[in-house]
Length: 147
Image (tube, rainbow, N blue to C red; front, top):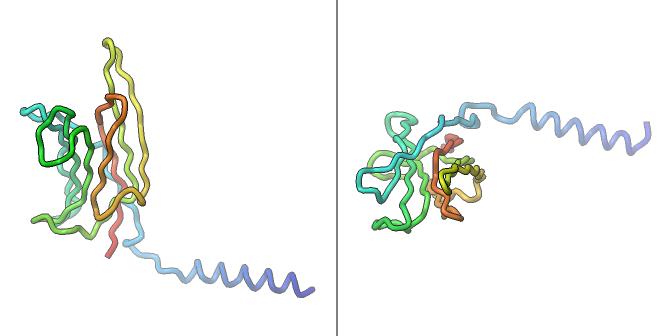
């Protein structure tokens, strides 16, 4: 064999060995919530999803503040976060979010879906301002244990 083929085979061997020796554990597994539907609260200023328990200490929650809502949070914004009890930062991180939006115009319903990847989710919190009067219908959160 000539030198080029030997070098290419050596590089491929090192790459395959690296993948084979990489740690495989539950920490690298991605989990997914079901559809978490937003339900309007009685004060008509917020919509919230049911809290999804990850384990006895961690949970995922989402809420939407309506444009006319009065809150400590920004108006017309969707928030998704992972928390531990007592507001501490969770060991779990959302790595991907799928949010389905709904809008009603002249009795007709229109739907739109947006997907957000990990770079948009910072410090276990995510926020997004929907455009064109769309309101969140449901969200699906993909998450992973980080520690």
